[in-house]
Every structure is written in C-alpha cells, then in structure tokens.
Amino acid sequence: MEKITFASQLMQYLITGLTVGSIYAMVAIGFNIIYNVTEIINFAQGEFVMLGGLIMVFLHVAAGLPLLAAFPLTIILVTLAGMLLDRLAISPIRQPSVLTLIIATIGASIIIKGIAMFIWGKDPFDLPAFSGRNPIHLMGAVIQPQYLWVGGFLIIIVILLTFFFEKTIIGKAMSACAENPDAASLVGINVKHMILLSFSLSAAIGAVAGITITPISLMEYDRGAMLAIKGFGAVVLGGLGSFPGAILGGLILGTIESFGAGLIHSGYKDAFALIVLLAVLFIRPSGLLGSVEVSKFKRF
Image (cartoon, rainbow, N blue to C red; front, top):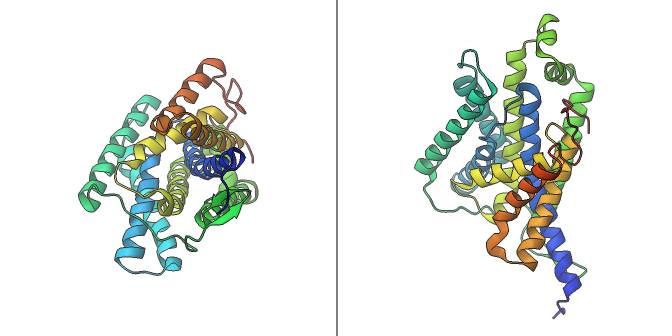
C-alpha cells in the first residue's frame, strides 16, 4: 500500500482543484460570451450546466443511448434551451435596461430550476465515467480518468472559440457587435441574431461542463445556482469580459477551494468562492487580467 504523505496530499488537492476549476472556467467563459455582446450577467448560466448533466443522464442512462449519440444530442437540446431563454425572456423586453435584463435572467433561472425539479425530482443522479473509474496514480495522488476529460474539453473549447472569433465571418460579426452594436447594425449585422448566438454558445459550453462533471460529483436540480456563483466569482477574479481571465480565474478559484477544503475545513468549501469574490472586489475590482475600462472580447 502506497504511503500517503503531506506532499502527495497537496498534489491531490491541486489536481482536484484544477479539475473543478476547469468547470468554473467553462461557466465563466459562458458568462463572458453573453456579457461581451449584451453587457448583462446571465445568472441562468448555471442552469445550463445543470440541464446538461440531467439531460445526459436521461438520454444515456434512462433511454440507453450510446455515449457518442447522447453527448451531441444533449448539447443540442441545451443549446435550444439557451435560444428559448433569449427569445422568451430577453428579446420581448421593450426598452430594456441592463438591470431589467439581469432580473429577467434570475427569473428564468428560477423557472428552469422548477421545471427540472418537476421532471427529475430532488434526488442526485450519477453518470457513468466516459472511460471507466480505474484511477491513475501520479506522485502519490489519485487521478480519475474523468478528470482528464474535463481538462481536455476545456482545452477543446478554448481552441474552437479562438478559431471561431479569429477566423470566421460570424465570429468577427459577433466581435463587432461587442465593440459597438450601433455601428455593427449600420454595416448590416443583425445584432439580435448575434445576441441569440451568444446565448446559444454559452448554453452549449454549459452543457459540456454539466456532462463532464456529473460522473465526478453527481447532478441535481438545484446545483445550477451555486455553479453560477462560482462561475461569476471566476469572472470577477479573472476580469469581466476577459476570456483568458475567465480561464485563469476559474482555475485559481477551484484550486483555492480545494486547498481550503483540504487544509482548513470541507464545510466551508462553498464559502471560499464568496470570500475570494469579495476580496477581489475590494482590492482589484477590474480582476487579475481586466482593466478599469473593460475591453470587449479580448482574444485568447
């Protein structure tokens, strides 16, 4: 039996923190995509993660669809939910203010949570790990294969978004709307379509986060609210509107949470995100990679 040392425990906390932080980073990226186009904070972002996990459980476990079919179908369904959120809760608001739109997303979050509780109940659900649960041992730490899937999908998302915003016409049009929606409209870009696309992209990324984290920590109807808080904490920590900041903030937040739970007390695990959020707001409101005047759609 391998001897557990303090160094191996620290390595375990680091690996766990980076894994959880990758999920927070995905949620934070979803926040920034919508913020950069609409200047609102979508507090229903956590519900996309919850829906991704629960719909995947239904399709893969209950309905028996193979993983390769259930995975893209889940992303499509959650993306449709994101589109409905824009069309039913955001677009109908006339002369919207930022505060009104934020309140609309909070209301949508409550409704989505209620619908999920009605469909799936209050019990947590498990999802089989993508490549089994036989652990990998590294420097005394235990790495579940699912951890690698979480980190891998974060890297894939970063690469795809970089290509999308840098190389595609639609991505450049979306960036133009983020810089100046009035000017973008004058050159023929449909701003409403770009807003719809921003909700679709953020929902799809949330679905990926929910699918990949469910085999590790289960999923239930009310997980979305706390994930949204953690993701927003990552956004504030990294810098609102900064995509590199979202990734850095998520990884740092997850690591702080893991070390805090392991070295201090696990009962305070969820409080660490709030403490970090308050500290950053007091010390550096612009975040680690943000500026006083938020720069829209910073590149990867």
